Image 1 (tube, rainbow, N blue to C red):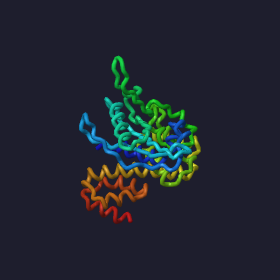
Image 2: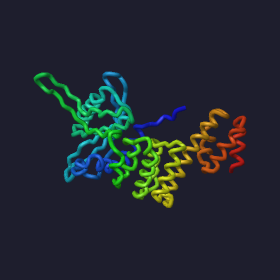
Image 3: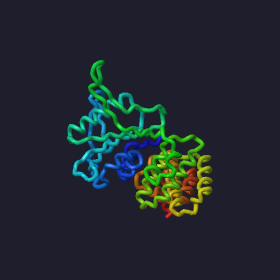
Length: 298
Protein backbone atom coordinates (compact mmCIF):
# COMPACT_ATOMS: atom_id res chain seq x y z
CA UNK A 1 0.00 0.00 0.00
CA UNK A 2 1.37 3.45 -0.92
CA UNK A 3 1.52 5.87 1.99
CA UNK A 4 -0.73 8.87 1.48
CA UNK A 5 0.91 12.20 2.25
CA UNK A 6 -1.17 15.26 3.09
CA UNK A 7 1.09 17.70 1.26
CA UNK A 8 -1.05 20.77 1.92
CA UNK A 9 -1.18 20.11 5.66
CA UNK A 10 2.58 19.54 5.88
CA UNK A 11 3.32 22.80 4.08
CA UNK A 12 0.69 24.73 6.03
CA UNK A 13 2.18 23.57 9.33
CA UNK A 14 5.71 24.46 8.23
CA UNK A 15 4.85 27.89 6.82
CA UNK A 16 2.54 28.96 9.63
CA UNK A 17 5.17 27.98 12.24
CA UNK A 18 7.97 29.78 10.40
CA UNK A 19 5.93 32.41 8.58
CA UNK A 20 8.28 35.40 8.84
CA UNK A 21 11.29 33.20 8.07
CA UNK A 22 9.48 32.08 4.90
CA UNK A 23 8.87 35.71 3.91
CA UNK A 24 12.51 36.64 4.63
CA UNK A 25 13.81 33.75 2.54
CA UNK A 26 11.64 34.09 -0.57
CA UNK A 27 10.11 37.57 -0.37
CA UNK A 28 12.79 39.85 1.12
CA UNK A 29 11.19 42.95 -0.43
CA UNK A 30 7.95 42.19 1.41
CA UNK A 31 9.89 41.57 4.63
CA UNK A 32 11.21 45.14 4.34
CA UNK A 33 7.72 46.68 4.60
CA UNK A 34 6.03 44.00 6.71
CA UNK A 35 5.53 44.47 10.46
CA UNK A 36 6.86 41.24 11.96
CA UNK A 37 4.25 41.16 14.70
CA UNK A 38 1.40 40.67 15.10
CA UNK A 39 0.53 38.04 12.51
CA UNK A 40 -3.03 36.68 12.65
CA UNK A 41 -3.80 33.51 10.75
CA UNK A 42 -7.38 33.69 9.54
CA UNK A 43 -9.75 30.76 9.78
CA UNK A 44 -9.96 28.37 6.87
CA UNK A 45 -11.72 29.78 3.84
CA UNK A 46 -13.77 27.46 1.63
CA UNK A 47 -14.13 28.06 -2.08
CA UNK A 48 -16.43 26.27 -4.52
CA UNK A 49 -15.00 26.15 -8.03
CA UNK A 50 -17.81 27.40 -10.27
CA UNK A 51 -16.38 25.48 -13.22
CA UNK A 52 -15.87 22.03 -11.67
CA UNK A 53 -18.13 22.32 -8.62
CA UNK A 54 -15.25 21.08 -6.47
CA UNK A 55 -14.99 22.54 -2.95
CA UNK A 56 -11.49 23.63 -1.99
CA UNK A 57 -9.86 25.00 1.14
CA UNK A 58 -7.46 27.93 0.85
CA UNK A 59 -4.16 26.95 2.44
CA UNK A 60 -2.85 29.89 4.46
CA UNK A 61 -4.18 33.41 5.06
CA UNK A 62 -2.09 35.74 7.20
CA UNK A 63 -3.41 39.14 8.30
CA UNK A 64 -0.42 41.46 8.71
CA UNK A 65 0.39 45.18 8.94
CA UNK A 66 2.52 47.51 6.88
CA UNK A 67 5.56 48.50 8.92
CA UNK A 68 4.99 51.60 11.00
CA UNK A 69 1.32 51.81 9.98
CA UNK A 70 -2.05 50.63 11.21
CA UNK A 71 -3.02 49.58 7.70
CA UNK A 72 -3.38 45.84 7.19
CA UNK A 73 -3.13 43.49 4.23
CA UNK A 74 -3.49 39.74 3.72
CA UNK A 75 -0.81 37.38 2.46
CA UNK A 76 -2.40 34.36 0.81
CA UNK A 77 0.01 31.41 0.45
CA UNK A 78 -1.20 28.47 -1.61
CA UNK A 79 0.73 25.21 -1.85
CA UNK A 80 0.23 23.47 -5.19
CA UNK A 81 1.42 19.86 -5.01
CA UNK A 82 0.42 18.90 -8.56
CA UNK A 83 0.39 20.61 -11.94
CA UNK A 84 -3.10 21.77 -12.88
CA UNK A 85 -4.60 23.27 -16.01
CA UNK A 86 -6.20 26.68 -15.47
CA UNK A 87 -4.55 27.07 -12.07
CA UNK A 88 -3.87 30.77 -12.70
CA UNK A 89 -7.60 31.30 -13.21
CA UNK A 90 -8.36 29.59 -9.91
CA UNK A 91 -5.84 31.82 -8.13
CA UNK A 92 -7.61 34.87 -9.55
CA UNK A 93 -10.95 33.56 -8.30
CA UNK A 94 -9.40 33.13 -4.83
CA UNK A 95 -8.05 36.68 -4.99
CA UNK A 96 -11.40 38.13 -6.04
CA UNK A 97 -13.27 36.28 -3.29
CA UNK A 98 -10.82 37.36 -0.59
CA UNK A 99 -10.66 40.96 -1.78
CA UNK A 100 -14.45 41.23 -1.88
CA UNK A 101 -14.87 39.59 1.53
CA UNK A 102 -12.18 41.47 3.46
CA UNK A 103 -11.82 44.72 1.45
CA UNK A 104 -8.07 44.61 2.03
CA UNK A 105 -5.09 44.34 -0.31
CA UNK A 106 -4.28 40.68 -1.00
CA UNK A 107 -0.69 39.56 -1.68
CA UNK A 108 -0.93 36.17 -3.46
CA UNK A 109 1.90 33.62 -3.25
CA UNK A 110 2.03 30.10 -4.69
CA UNK A 111 4.53 27.42 -3.69
CA UNK A 112 4.71 24.90 -6.53
CA UNK A 113 5.98 21.86 -4.64
CA UNK A 114 5.56 19.03 -7.16
CA UNK A 115 8.55 17.16 -8.62
CA UNK A 116 7.19 16.94 -12.16
CA UNK A 117 6.82 18.57 -14.63
CA UNK A 118 10.00 20.64 -14.63
CA UNK A 119 8.68 23.34 -16.95
CA UNK A 120 8.26 26.80 -15.48
CA UNK A 121 4.68 27.32 -14.33
CA UNK A 122 2.62 30.34 -15.34
CA UNK A 123 2.03 33.06 -12.75
CA UNK A 124 -0.34 35.40 -14.55
CA UNK A 125 -4.01 35.38 -15.54
CA UNK A 126 -5.26 37.77 -18.22
CA UNK A 127 -8.52 38.81 -19.79
CA UNK A 128 -8.06 40.97 -22.85
CA UNK A 129 -9.45 41.98 -26.21
CA UNK A 130 -7.68 43.27 -29.32
CA UNK A 131 -8.35 46.82 -28.18
CA UNK A 132 -8.52 46.46 -24.38
CA UNK A 133 -6.71 44.66 -21.60
CA UNK A 134 -9.44 44.15 -19.02
CA UNK A 135 -7.41 42.26 -16.45
CA UNK A 136 -3.84 41.31 -15.66
CA UNK A 137 -3.58 39.37 -12.43
CA UNK A 138 -0.13 38.32 -11.15
CA UNK A 139 1.04 36.28 -8.19
CA UNK A 140 4.46 35.44 -6.77
CA UNK A 141 5.49 31.92 -7.75
CA UNK A 142 8.03 29.86 -5.81
CA UNK A 143 8.65 26.76 -7.91
CA UNK A 144 10.80 24.45 -5.83
CA UNK A 145 11.82 22.12 -8.65
CA UNK A 146 13.34 25.16 -10.41
CA UNK A 147 15.55 26.01 -7.42
CA UNK A 148 19.01 24.58 -6.79
CA UNK A 149 19.50 23.31 -3.22
CA UNK A 150 23.15 24.45 -3.27
CA UNK A 151 22.01 28.08 -3.36
CA UNK A 152 20.46 27.66 0.11
CA UNK A 153 23.30 25.93 1.97
CA UNK A 154 24.42 29.08 3.78
CA UNK A 155 20.95 30.33 4.67
CA UNK A 156 20.51 30.31 8.44
CA UNK A 157 16.81 29.81 7.99
CA UNK A 158 14.62 26.90 9.16
CA UNK A 159 12.47 27.08 6.02
CA UNK A 160 15.58 26.56 3.89
CA UNK A 161 16.51 23.54 6.03
CA UNK A 162 13.11 22.02 5.24
CA UNK A 163 12.47 23.04 1.62
CA UNK A 164 15.89 21.99 0.30
CA UNK A 165 14.36 18.50 0.45
CA UNK A 166 11.89 19.50 -2.31
CA UNK A 167 14.23 21.44 -4.59
CA UNK A 168 16.03 20.37 -7.77
CA UNK A 169 18.17 17.42 -6.65
CA UNK A 170 20.15 15.03 -8.86
CA UNK A 171 19.54 11.40 -7.79
CA UNK A 172 23.17 10.98 -6.72
CA UNK A 173 22.92 14.02 -4.44
CA UNK A 174 19.92 12.85 -2.39
CA UNK A 175 21.95 11.49 0.57
CA UNK A 176 24.10 14.62 0.72
CA UNK A 177 21.09 16.95 0.60
CA UNK A 178 19.50 15.10 3.52
CA UNK A 179 22.75 15.41 5.46
CA UNK A 180 22.99 19.12 4.59
CA UNK A 181 19.41 19.69 5.78
CA UNK A 182 20.38 18.04 9.04
CA UNK A 183 23.58 20.10 9.33
CA UNK A 184 21.67 23.34 8.83
CA UNK A 185 18.99 22.25 11.27
CA UNK A 186 21.64 21.50 13.91
CA UNK A 187 23.10 25.00 13.60
CA UNK A 188 19.71 26.64 14.20
CA UNK A 189 19.35 25.27 17.77
CA UNK A 190 15.55 25.30 17.71
CA UNK A 191 13.31 23.97 20.46
CA UNK A 192 12.44 20.24 20.27
CA UNK A 193 8.96 20.74 18.78
CA UNK A 194 10.19 22.92 15.91
CA UNK A 195 13.19 20.68 15.34
CA UNK A 196 10.82 17.71 15.05
CA UNK A 197 8.61 19.60 12.59
CA UNK A 198 11.50 20.28 10.21
CA UNK A 199 13.16 16.89 10.61
CA UNK A 200 9.83 15.17 9.95
CA UNK A 201 9.29 17.30 6.83
CA UNK A 202 12.75 16.41 5.50
CA UNK A 203 12.32 12.70 6.21
CA UNK A 204 8.93 12.67 4.50
CA UNK A 205 10.31 14.03 1.24
CA UNK A 206 13.80 12.51 1.27
CA UNK A 207 13.22 8.83 2.01
CA UNK A 208 16.45 6.99 1.24
CA UNK A 209 16.90 3.42 0.08
CA UNK A 210 19.49 1.12 1.68
CA UNK A 211 22.30 2.20 -0.65
CA UNK A 212 21.53 5.89 -0.19
CA UNK A 213 21.33 5.38 3.57
CA UNK A 214 24.92 4.13 3.64
CA UNK A 215 26.06 7.18 1.67
CA UNK A 216 24.06 9.39 4.05
CA UNK A 217 25.79 7.89 7.09
CA UNK A 218 29.16 8.46 5.37
CA UNK A 219 28.21 12.11 4.76
CA UNK A 220 27.40 12.52 8.46
CA UNK A 221 30.84 11.16 9.30
CA UNK A 222 32.53 13.51 6.83
CA UNK A 223 30.68 16.52 8.27
CA UNK A 224 31.44 15.47 11.84
CA UNK A 225 27.74 15.45 12.63
CA UNK A 226 27.78 12.10 14.43
CA UNK A 227 29.34 13.92 17.36
CA UNK A 228 26.27 16.15 17.63
CA UNK A 229 23.81 14.72 20.16
CA UNK A 230 20.84 16.56 18.62
CA UNK A 231 21.71 15.20 15.16
CA UNK A 232 21.91 11.62 16.35
CA UNK A 233 18.59 11.99 18.17
CA UNK A 234 16.99 13.06 14.89
CA UNK A 235 18.61 10.22 12.94
CA UNK A 236 17.47 7.70 15.56
CA UNK A 237 13.95 9.12 15.36
CA UNK A 238 13.98 8.71 11.56
CA UNK A 239 15.15 5.11 11.91
CA UNK A 240 12.46 4.35 14.49
CA UNK A 241 9.74 5.78 12.27
CA UNK A 242 10.90 3.71 9.30
CA UNK A 243 11.08 0.58 11.46
CA UNK A 244 7.57 1.25 12.81
CA UNK A 245 6.10 1.57 9.33
CA UNK A 246 7.83 -1.60 8.12
CA UNK A 247 6.81 -3.68 11.16
CA UNK A 248 3.20 -2.44 11.05
CA UNK A 249 2.90 -3.29 7.35
CA UNK A 250 4.30 -6.77 7.98
CA UNK A 251 2.01 -7.37 10.95
CA UNK A 252 -1.09 -6.29 9.02
CA UNK A 253 -0.24 -8.89 6.40
CA UNK A 254 0.73 -11.57 8.90
CA UNK A 255 -1.96 -11.38 11.59
CA UNK A 256 -4.56 -8.94 10.23
CA UNK A 257 -5.54 -5.34 10.94
CA UNK A 258 -4.29 -4.19 14.33
CA UNK A 259 -6.45 -2.55 16.97
CA UNK A 260 -5.40 1.06 17.71
CA UNK A 261 -4.22 0.11 21.21
CA UNK A 262 -1.87 -2.55 19.84
CA UNK A 263 -0.56 -0.21 17.15
CA UNK A 264 0.14 2.42 19.79
CA UNK A 265 2.11 -0.07 21.91
CA UNK A 266 4.24 -0.94 18.89
CA UNK A 267 4.93 2.72 18.15
CA UNK A 268 6.22 3.13 21.71
CA UNK A 269 8.86 0.41 21.28
CA UNK A 270 12.50 1.54 21.08
CA UNK A 271 14.46 0.82 17.92
CA UNK A 272 16.15 -2.36 19.17
CA UNK A 273 12.81 -3.91 20.17
CA UNK A 274 11.23 -2.91 16.84
CA UNK A 275 14.05 -4.67 15.03
CA UNK A 276 13.55 -7.75 17.22
CA UNK A 277 9.80 -7.72 16.51
CA UNK A 278 10.52 -7.44 12.80
CA UNK A 279 12.38 -10.76 12.99
CA UNK A 280 10.09 -12.59 15.44
CA UNK A 281 6.83 -11.76 13.66
CA UNK A 282 7.81 -14.16 10.87
CA UNK A 283 6.90 -16.97 13.31
CA UNK A 284 3.52 -15.48 14.31
CA UNK A 285 0.36 -17.37 13.38
CA UNK A 286 -2.33 -15.06 14.72
CA UNK A 287 -2.97 -11.96 16.83
CA UNK A 288 -2.42 -13.81 20.11
CA UNK A 289 1.25 -14.34 19.21
CA UNK A 290 1.69 -10.59 18.89
CA UNK A 291 -0.08 -9.92 22.19
CA UNK A 292 2.10 -12.50 23.96
CA UNK A 293 5.25 -11.00 22.43
CA UNK A 294 4.31 -7.51 23.60
CA UNK A 295 3.61 -8.79 27.12
CA UNK A 296 7.02 -10.42 27.29
CA UNK A 297 8.64 -7.25 25.91
CA UNK A 298 7.48 -5.16 28.90
